[in-house]
Image 1 (cartoon, one colour):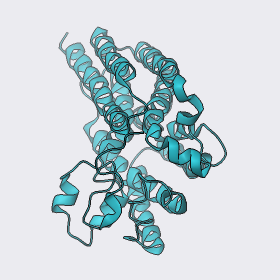
Image 2 (tube, helix red, strand yellow):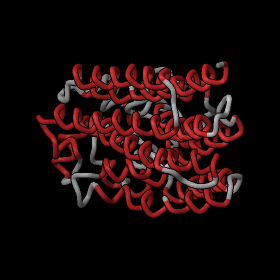
Image 3 (spheres, one colour):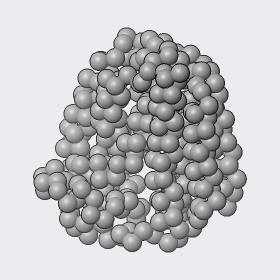
Image 4 (tube, one colour):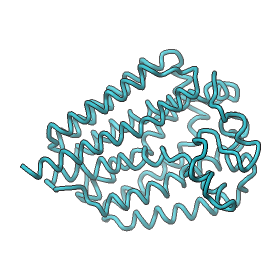
Length: 322
């Protein structure tokens, strides 16, 4: 498998970028030396994960706004979910790296991460994890009572995720369950409860994550096989494009159903169709044997998410002007 250009070099020194990080990213360029390993541990140098965690929250807040005939999504909630996504994405990555520190040291793409490379000690990583969780808790406690309890309900799924690749070929499914909890949280924060629209949105979002994280996992396919780790990339193998077609079809269908149940207008569905075209492009141009290609298609899911969110915003704006 062809690897990205910085693969195998990232761990040579603390000043070299970590694998997956773009060259000359703002963290590596401007962060003070003492903070750099911690920002890398929280994946601040690789911001696509923030979008993938935050956007389902934003979609849900927006669809709940459509359902309640709001003129625009609740800006306070969007800010809170953005802060929460930054904190909890960082906390999740830190927790994952703590659990996987021995495995990461054996995988070419991950051995440059701060813990296996020795840039951050285990005890310091645990303190950093707790600090990020406290920020996330502060955000959660700013929401209504139903949302608070709903937020705590995802903790067992998050805790389970890093261990799944040791026992199942479907860790991407567990990641999807955890990573898209915001598709439920956003609606609950607006409405104080749940409905079928956010459930449909959640189903579609989980299928989306299984798809894009399968693409991501193909970067590690050979190393994972050697050390006995499991993934959907290994499970699907040469049939990956067929499986992606299934999961991305569920994504588009379930998100369309969520729009119907929320009362979205034609602008939302036109935007969703455009976003689904982006998913089709991913499948059509994917080369599972080229890690750079896989990484680029994985990152492009930010674009899918933003297209859907702006479709919701435009739908709300036009509906309010009629």
